[in-house]
Amino acid sequence: MSNSNILSSLNCYLVGGAVRDQLLNNEIYDRDWVVVGSSVKEMLSLGFIQVGKDFPVFLHPKTKEEYALARTERKQGQGYTGFICNAQADVTLEDDLLRRDLTINAMALSNSGEIIDPYSGQQDLDNRILRHVSDAFVEDPLRVLRVARFATRFHQYNFTVAPETLALMKKISESGELSTLSGERIWQEMSRSLAEEHPDVFFQTLRDCGALNKIWPELDALWGIPNPVEHHPEVCSGVHTMMVLQQSVKLSSSINIRFAALCHDLGKTLSSKDSLPRHIGHEKSGLPLIEKICKKLKVPNKAKSLALKVCQFHLHCHRALELKPQSIMTLFNHLDVWRKPEEFEDFLLVCQADATGRLGFESNDYPQAQFLRELYTQANKVKSLEFVEQGLTGIKIKEAMNEKKLKIIAELKATLNF
Image 1 (cartoon, rainbow, N blue to C red):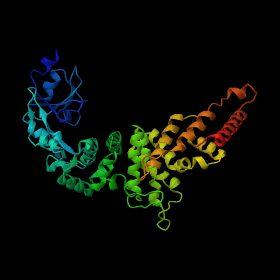
Image 2 (image 1 turned 180 degrees about the horizontal axis):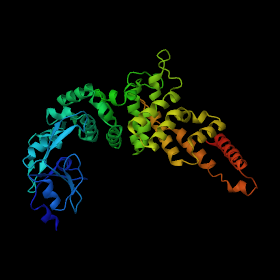
Image 3 (image 1 turned 90 degrees about the horizontal axis):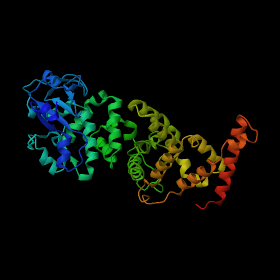
């Protein structure tokens, strides 16, 4: 059966993000459809494959695009899963659009090209406003994160969150409902936001509505913690962290690098008030805080590993030009550069972002990174075969390799001009 024959008996509408992105002249990656006036039985009879357990969502047998029966939702329990779904044939398109989060996501496009916009989504799109569709917005705590993500994604178009929507986000944050969100779901929204060009907007939006304190209190606590003004003209640790995140975006598209940028100074939240604005030992005190958030959000191991290494050793990197050869060798071993060169490069980029993520330092060079790259590149040319051919075995090979690597590092350090 052809695609047109499959759909000929269905009343279908393109909905949500595809309509929004089409009106913004953005590339459309996913198309979601709503089917009005149909039933599970009819969809199955046409060859659609049902995938939704809690509500009837189907995959088109040929295109594999998602088709969902028009539905309403009623809050029954806590969290973003505590809803009762009604997908009877009498549910209208307007009913279905009413349950959506933002007006710009509550538009539909008919097969004839007509825009169905019962909640003024086009007007909010034109005015660059993120506004909730109805007061039912507060029933789903996940929407706090989604709005923050949309604020991040559309920051380049100068979108802002409507004051009344921000007020509802604050209400959700104060309700305790954010605690019902799974770590995986939070990470999904956070990681998608970290992939955008302005990920700092995500965290600032969460701060504005009081949600960051509930989701990641250790990060939220950085705001207001001072740094020495001679090293940090921006003073505030939270502001600095957002500047480091912005600098990391300029250097790489890697989510791991951007996450490590967020985590590098978490230990400053534990600094003694008597020692401020100094932060003695914050590199090591931050490690348990990174472990904690990674466990909570189920952060992937590669992101966690990089974040821990940056936190513990970023000051060593900043002082690389002054370190003794043995200290550099020890740093390389701690970073496991011989087995994980890609992670080492990521480490250097985060450290560079940290160094330039300060007011007035944004365009500064960071010679420490190139210095350590060159030392690593030359030392890494030492191979075990040379010592095997000399008749060495076991631990003697490793010792000889380390000795030669250290000699190369010492000689280069004495000659390189940085």
